[in-house]
Image (tube, rainbow, N blue to C red; front, top):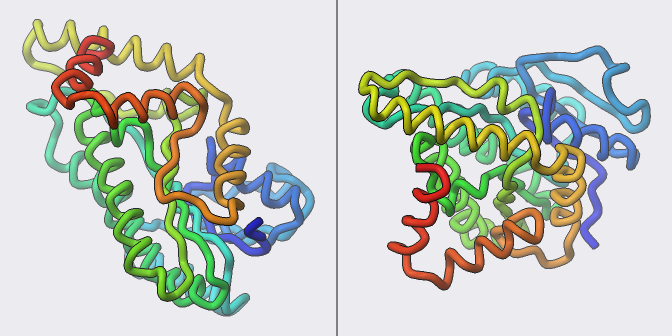
Length: 269
């Protein structure tokens, strides 16, 4: 089993990320949490060692400062959990370009830059890169087209990193949770639709999606499964979380794309 003693995490101030931080601390780990929001220490598990580093991962100088601080405290860590993200919804035609750019900045470009800065630390420990993706990376969701696109990018990044970094002993894994009950749903940035016909379909789709999310797995359940995968001796590069979503991924792999795309549209279109 792969042992986690030190870990760096982005997006550890809420939701799945915060549960990962607490579970690591409970196991006595040393955790470096990079987030724009710094919480009082008593908000977290009292065990382990927690370093909260205020950081905007989309700002290069802020990220440089954060990794300089990490470098002052350690020359290696075992896992990078790249977990920062947010959700947007809306029709493709009505989503502002600025919102799309920010979506890719946070989910893709900041993740890539965080990975790049982590490689020297992870090479010393033969560590792991965990990218929080989503089932939406495979089941492309209408009215969340850009969210599906950024998560699909993370899956591809994990596959490429695995082949590129294997000579350093580093493994990369993209974790794909399905519906999860967190504050992510309430924080989703909702767009507007100019066309009345589109607006009706959009609101119906998002209402169903949010209902499914709020009746989904708890953040702690997902975090436990994520850590179980991280600790596997020989992990695969892509994982769905939960039996149902693993089954969905198998179906989407073996069925024709036209059929699976139709099914996604039937559910949320």
